[in-house]
Image (cartoon, rainbow over all chains, first blue to last red):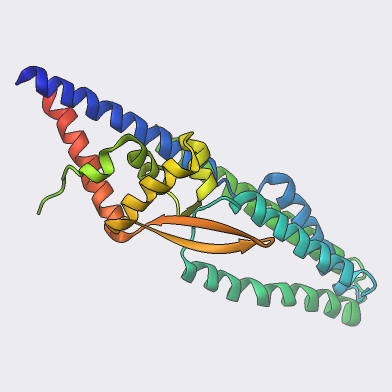
Length: 154
Length: 97
């Protein structure tokens, strides 16, 4: 009986070790947005906001194409083979509802500051602020994921 | 209420690994599971079918660049069964201590 129980226990421990290892492998597959892509995306969005704020529309189409391309590359890299939803769908929708007006508000603010106060530097400051904000969000998401990953690993 | 239950379907090494890989994720592509387990397509298909037959996992098909990809996820029933099985394994281990 004791021998049987020992074998069972050893087998159970091995199974638990194997489970932990596979969970670790699974989590490793789904790191959020890579830092470099996050930085490029932040820079492109910031530049677009700055240029639209300054009412320079020449490069708008190119910037939109680049932003969409980077977003697609990012999706393929971070979630091409396995997916983990870190935020609920409801949170994502609420987030988008808040972010989209902010995007237009940033552009309109730049235009307003130029037209009413002749602060020609304003859209570029707003664009830089947006770039830094997106970059901070990407880095925070990475850090929080890595912390959670390490906690689950242990 | 019972919070641990040994599940012979899940306990087979490959199926245990499949469930463990799927458990922290939303969905995983076929080839990822195959590569991580280090088994052939046919062996993996056999194990997946067994898990599908009991309703523990489900598949979703999608086309990427004209190629069909199969994604798998644990169902609610599968997640529950896996959780109960893990609890049972922990209970077996802790009983000896």
